[in-house]
Image 1 (cartoon, rainbow, N blue to C red):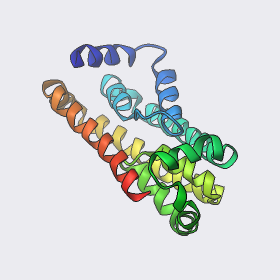
Image 2 (image 1 turned 90 degrees about the vertical axis):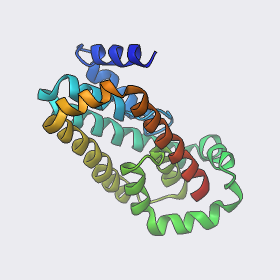
Image 3 (image 1 turned 45 degrees about the horizontal axis):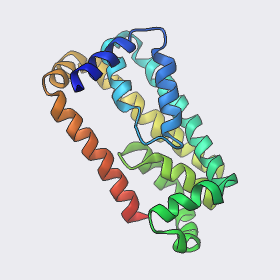
Image 4 (image 1 turned 90 degrees about the horizontal axis):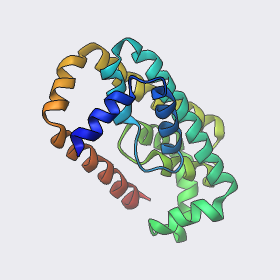
Length: 193
């Protein structure tokens, strides 16, 4: 099953819809969707290394715009969106105290969430809900999301063939590690928030 999904993604990455699919996944991941765009980004760069910079730019811009949408959800739909997220993590009752502390270190939180497996969407929604300065949020998002997607793409462009071989030979292991990082990110979010 993993092999079929990988092969399908490789074929998708070579179609005219690839960038649109990446943009859509990247946008919704930054605001509500739990599946990160990194695997699709990686497969697309491995399939088309000559377009690595364009792929990185599309993923970055879409992710930043999705982050802004997440910020808006937190800012304008707090009761409908942010409260259930906080309630899920068992932190709704600590929101006021967390808000003040978060805004003090908000730029760092956005940077860390944007660069790591920590669920970026939690921070985008929380940033809007706590009223983190939008300029600070946007600049931190540009640095984090633009930086990580450009770095991944550049490394795959430069060292792609051996990495592609490693992924294809150890697809199960790579998938397991990616899932562990994703689940670990959500666990850390639940613990920290």
